Length: 257
Figure 1 (tube, rainbow, N blue to C red):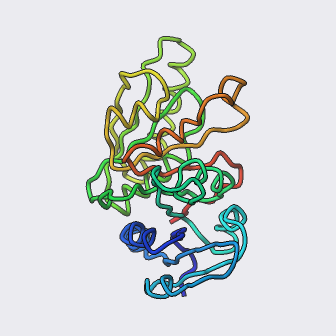
Figure 2 (figure 1 turned 60 degrees about the vertical axis):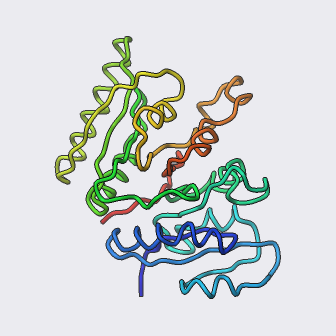
């Protein structure tokens, strides 16, 4: 009996076809975790497409937000997968705005997979961004998992700050990366971002990584102007790059293998 699970959040057979290769890949590589489907709807419907997948599943009547918030505690989830597609109807879980709304209180990392994107290859590039803020620990941990278990390369992208204080804080963050990665025998490259704007978007455009590890926006850090603008995460989900999101939570669940 598996004690931890990679959970694919699905609304249709098409979602299953998008996510199943990724789910099997991660469940196998992350020290042979369990694999399951999670389906949530307002009322009970035809579940034959879930049965035909050949994967254990849970089909619940209720709200996606409630089920997703309980992924770690109710289902022993360590990673969630969800398909993302900006062309679907707005009410779909795959629609970027709804996806982000439903996952805003998710306590595990969630990988948003655009339809038609190839499986993360061995030796593929995983990118994450550093700023002068202290927000990188969970990003580094997941980067280490993808390196150690999946065989990826890690690139840390950052700004070339002119402000001395910001440069010093960034240097401290990079030293922390060295401290965390060295005992795990994880190597990484660093890249200076050339474009301005949101650092995650700049990293995607400059590096075109196979997966981006990103932290969602902390509502406590948003000012009035930010509330009037679309979230940076929305723009990321409009790209063809899979994004592994981590919510800024004190009770975030991470792997410990």
